[in-house]
Image (cartoon, rainbow, N blue to C red):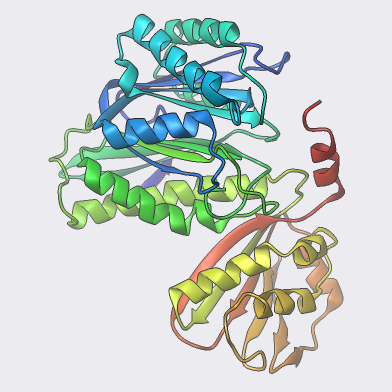
Length: 407
């Protein structure tokens, strides 16, 4: 398995396009279209927020009721959330426009939106955007990257990744793009992710692979503790790699799940590291826990701690905040047995052992905490299970960005 260049157009048979439809932004692209050359088996995982945006409801129905999907239309700037019957009609009209232009059945068109909640979409601009997108589709790597840029809101950088591996002597590719910077929190954290593959696989196994992988990737990140109304992960598999269709959990299935995990983990970390106002990707890795579930709970508790996030921003080795976050996680442990470390490309330093601080250098700790990627390593000394969670530091700019987000 190897990481290759590209994103959603890296796999065989996928095209993408981007355009500036002027839905909310006036100085950038804000719509993208992703199309498979042939109908692709679809899978999806969606927000657990009770308040669900119209596109989420639409996509849930498509993924559940249809074997395949062939197109995804995405807009940035307006979320089409809390928009009532009119919002659902926009999803229908968007799908109908795609059918009219590309001949793809309405029931195989997925839609996704991100942005301000409560505003109605300007349907005339949306329809005009779809027409431009349909006429400019391309399988080029550049088109995939342009699509990744068009779906951004407060993101500061586009996010994409692709990997290739062998199945039955055939090269299989998995590629993806995502957006997410704020309103990010475990339990499908506002984030959108679109993953494509040319693998041939059954719908049942595709959905199961995605569902299980989300729990260890997207549900292990947090920026600000807010779970959005629009969170969506869509996975399309069009079978154009030419492998024998995977219908059981054999070696080929496990190769695919490993590739999927690499793609989704990479995208999840890109979102966490690009959190609104962030200066650092903040990882917590828990090792030697008694159960996997406890390891996940402990790791998420630390990366969700506002006090710890603020300490990371200040490059302050305030290990008491980490210990405190572990302590209120709900997992029972002996604080005098665990060990804490800070890690980065600048090195590793132990800061806590046997219930007290170690004789560590504050200057060395500050140097480690000043890097763009910082890890807190927690050794629970209780078993063999481990888990990682990802977040970012909490900065002044986070408040500035969200204080006037609508304007």
